[in-house]
Image 1: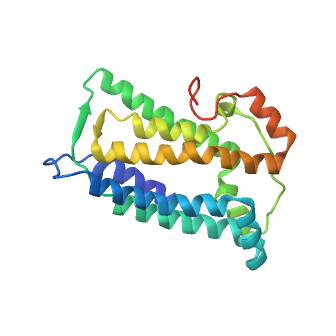
Image 2: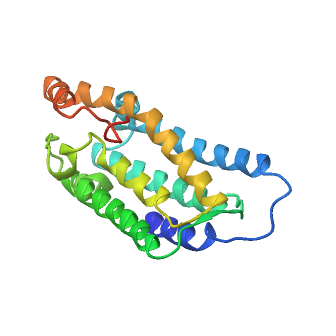
Amino acid sequence: MTSLGLFGWCYMVRYGAVGPAPRGIAGPLAVDLLLFSVFALHHSIMARTGAKRWLTEHFPAALERSAYVWVASLLFAWTCLSWQQIPLLLYQVNAPWRYACFGVQLAGIWMTARAAGVIDVLDLAGIRQAHGRLRAPVFKVIGPYHVVRHPIYLGWMLMTFGTPTMTGTRLAFAVISTSYLALAVPFEERSLVEEFGEEYRAYQQRVRWRMVPGIY
């Protein structure tokens, strides 16, 4: 939660800064891409079944999830704080449509919170496992999971792209992070099929769209 709060501050304050046009954006973009790639590499590798198996062989199973969350949170915080700024104002939406943009972002926050709640936030954070409350995973289709198969990712898109004041820094973060999510979905679904089998395959047939209704 701390790393997400830090991201919220960075996105609203640091990434919203507008200043003199930089001499070039290739350098900052390259650094930003490298920063997010390091975070994404850890996230992708450690979320896979093989890496999880390796962790449980070398560490107590109760600590596997919490260790993953701690490292991922620290890497995400480092990524947010080290993000290179591109202080260009690309567009600014004025009232009354400005408030509609805020509504889109609030919808993204709600969707993310609602979808995470279905999964169980305490399980996601590894708190239940750390306290010895390990339990078999249960596949549930509730709320936004009837719309897309990965509503947390859709919520992220609404939050990052929905801003009424789009700077180069915000756009770079939105595009790079969303691109990673889109690329990661097939690998994540492969793991979900391994975990839930025909139950998840049937869900894929019922809910066609992965992240964005009508597009992807």
